[in-house]
Image (cartoon, rainbow, N blue to C red):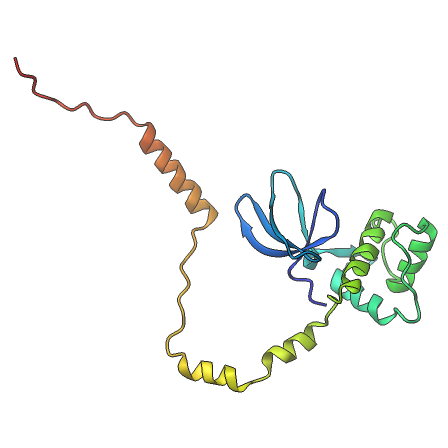
Length: 189
């Protein structure tokens, strides 16, 4: 599963598609309405779905792997509602991921996994990476023509790292606060 651009944002329902990052937050797009908005990092916490994993007894399992298993077993094992009873959710989850760590995995974790899977499935966004990769790697006449026309690779402007921009703003603020040298003006007497 390709979960690279999907983000869960605290205090905001559902999942969002990551558009761009800023130093003070993220630009995110609502999946249903396609509206883009800014979410401040002072107000929200962000969870990229590709970084989520569930604890198992030996190590952990990535969310994409769990979604793959859930999608494969969907016909034999129906998806419970996220507000189902605790026993039903853990029974379902133990069939999907039999070696999950009962001590570390909370009911809220299971509810989020079920909710996120249902959200993405209803919108047709659970696409395997291999299929998407094959489509992109197919050579087409248009791509070949573009490559033959393209002589020089485009150069991207280098972006400043966080430490450089901070030191730059600090040096700028120091220069502003330094006293100006007094100029000697000749006064007419």
